[in-house]
Image 1 (cartoon, rainbow, N blue to C red):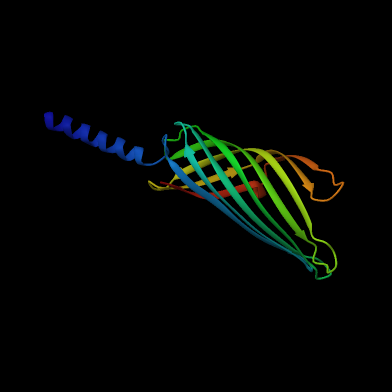
Image 2 (cartoon, one colour):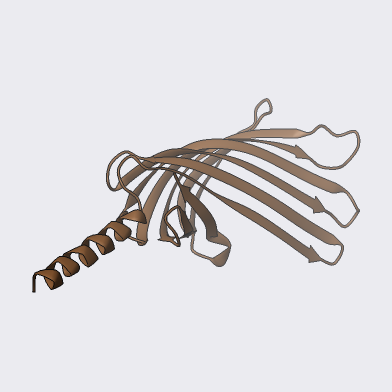
Length: 196
C-alpha cells in the first residue's frame, strides 16, 4: 500500500512539474512576431505587400505582460500606366496584454497597443516630390496562444478596434482621423512566440 501511495504521489508530482513547463509565469521574457506577405493582380494593376512586426514582452505579474514592438511595411503597386508606386513605413510601439490562463498550454488574451509610425510615399512619376506622413494609433485586439513545447507557442489575433491619426508632412496639411472595427479574415494575424 505504501508503494502505491508513493508511486501515485510521484506520478502526480511529475505531471504537475511537466504542466508548469508550458505557459507563462511572472518574470518570463518572450519574443514574438508576425510576417505578412500578400500579392494581388487585377488586369495590369499589381499590388504586393510585406509586413514584419517583431515584439518583445515581459510578464510583470502572473497575468499581465508588457512589451515593445517595431514594425516595417513595404507596399508596391504598379498602376495601369506602368508606374511603380511605393510606400515604406517604419514604426514602434508599446503594448500590454492580459492573459486569462497564462500558466496553461492554451490561453486567451486581450491586447492594448499604442503605436507611432512614419511613412514615405513615392508615386513613381519622375519630377514629382515624394510624400511623407507621420501617425499614431491606439488599438485593442483579442487573441489566443497555444504552447506546442516548453519554449514555443503559436499565437493568433483576429479583429481590431482602433483609433488612428495620420498627418502628411507638408505645410498646411490636415490630419486624417480614423476609427476601425475589423473582424474579417484580413484582420487575422498569426505569429510564433519563443519563451526564454
